[in-house]
Length: 153
Image (cartoon, rainbow, N blue to C red; front, top):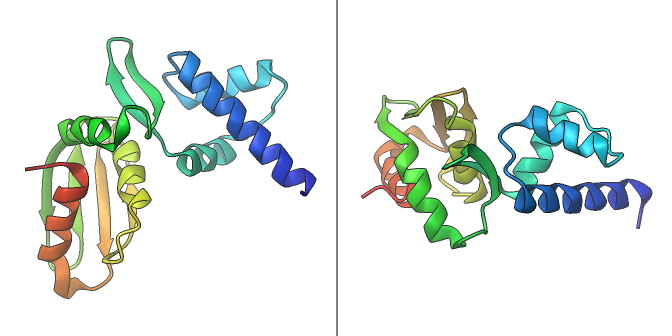
């Protein structure tokens, strides 16, 4: 195994350990904790790591904290994700999802993890996600699939 791959695996294991044992609210806090453990990481690398690990930010009594998407099963995550959605709208080209402030990145990661063949990708701001469909002919189908993915009835 290459040294780089070993480093990534060790970093991923440490991130998972930190997230499951502490209430971590943001990437800055996580970067500091990683540095205390001797791991230097850029924000871009940490963002990629969080996406690869399926980490989402969920509301708790401690505020928004990072959690592994597998904790509590997908049903539990879907329930929380559905609570973050304010609206879903579309035009002839894209679907726009509005979320509560700060929730869009986690929701976008959740959508991306489903690898829906009808969705090319997402772009997330703080409270808005643009979902780009594979073809504009299927906008209504994509909206229905998004509602299913996000647990919206």
